[in-house]
Length: 285
Ligand SMILES: Nc1ncnc2c1ncn2[C@@H]1O[C@H](COP(=O)(O)OP(=O)(O)OP(=O)(O)O)[C@@H](O)[C@H]1O
Image (cartoon, rainbow, N blue to C red; front, side, top):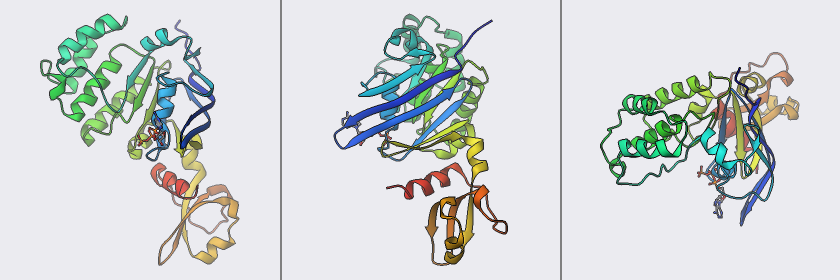
């Protein structure tokens, strides 16, 4: 029987300081078999978090465990087990996918040439065209094909779907969903396209100015929060701890609220993750 860690990723009290920016006391857990979406505005700290996980930059303090191991002590083993796609996919410009496949065979013990071929075909990538002549979307697709073809347990994707057209994004999201059907697999994905994350994520984390504003199971979020439209007077009558964020317009007020603290008589509408993020971030300074 194959054994696997309950948590693919555990981040405890992680801190990193740059002049003018701090990632503060970050705590995140990604259970195996799940997809965690990292959402944040430009400069919120998403890439910094991912680089710390990958040990590309050094943390100031805190701990990161990946697949049950400390990320610095087991970096070599972990490279086999983590598939990574960063926002800039960097292969040598002169290499073709065919040549890249041959190189990867020497790098990864579990490299699967036939799986790689299948992805190249599925993604319509020309085998013999040089990487430097690929479009941004083609580069992303090649990065994803390489990341998946060495049978990783954890996929880490930083803005990896942003350069893709909607049809291809949809196909790739299906591939990610299939990937985590295996309970020993997990995905950490950051994206500006919140609607993509909403489709596939089991857990959602909001980062804002280096602080974790929210970390929750997606279904729980949608049960917990809702949106109401009311007058300013009605808003004032509510328990203010139930109000998470407010948007005023000339004719009414829209407020994100905790559903279980809203009196009967109010119609509470479902809220999208994107709106929840926007409302929450606007309320935090
Ligand atoms: N090497 C560095 N030296 C100094 N500051 C840095 C460095 N790398 C990142 N930062 C700063 O850290 C902050 C967070 O950057 P990061 O790239 O993590 O944001 P992000 O959430 O990924 O943003 P985006 O969505 O724009 O990619 C920014 O203020 C950035 O200027």
